Image 1 (cartoon, rainbow, N blue to C red):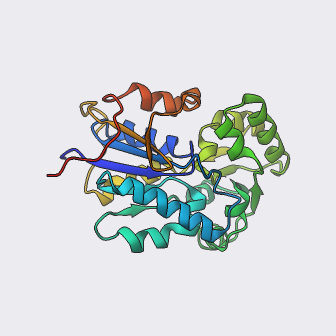
Image 2: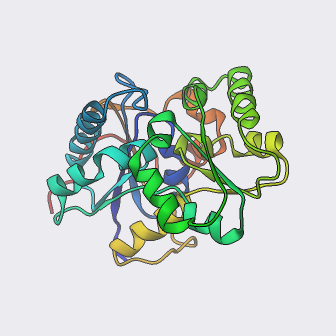
Length: 267
C-alpha cells in the first residue's frame, strides 16, 4: 500500500486511542490529529454547535489532503456524521465512531453503556440498543464530567468521575460499552472501579473500518515512517504535554517519524 494520510477529529484527547490503534496497525501511515481546544468540550453544546465544530475541524484537517477522515468522537458521530459525509464524500471517505453495543450484547447481558450525557440521551443511541441489544438488559450511564476530567489529566478528578459513574452502574453488569472515546484512555481505572465486566471500545473496529475504506490491510510490521501532524482549532501545534500522560499519547509521540505540521505536497 502506498503511504496514506488519515485525519482524525475530536474536541480533544478522545482521538488518541483511535490514532494509537491506527499507528499500531499501520506504522507507515501519516496521521493528522485535529483537536479543538478553543471550543472543547463538545458534549454540552447543542447539536447545531457540535455540527459546526466538527465541520470546522474536518475542514482544517482536509487542508492537509488526507485520504480519509475519522470522526474519533461518539458525540460528533451522533450529531455531525451525515453533515460531514455530505460535505466531503465521495472525495474523502468519512468514518464515524459507533458505540460497541453489538459486540457487548453478543458477549452477554446485562450491559451498561458509559457515555456523555449528549450521547446517552440521543435517539441514535436508543436506536443502537433497539437494533443490536433487543431483549438484553441495558443501562445507559451518563458519565457527567468524565470526559472533562480526562482532558484535564488530573488523576484525582478522573477517579472521582469514574467513581460517580460506577455508582450508577448496576451490580452484576457483564459488559460495559465505552461510549466516549475519551474514556478509552482511562479503561484501567474503569475496570478497577467495576471489577468483573468486560469493556468494549470502538477504537479497533474504527481502525479496521478505516483501512477497509482505504482498501488496505493491517501491517504492524511496516516501516515506522508515518508522520504525526497536530492541529489545535485549525492551528499547527505540538501534541499537548498532558497527552503524554496516557499510553496512547506516548505511543504516538514515540513512534514513527518526527511530528511536523503542514499539508501534503501536491502530487
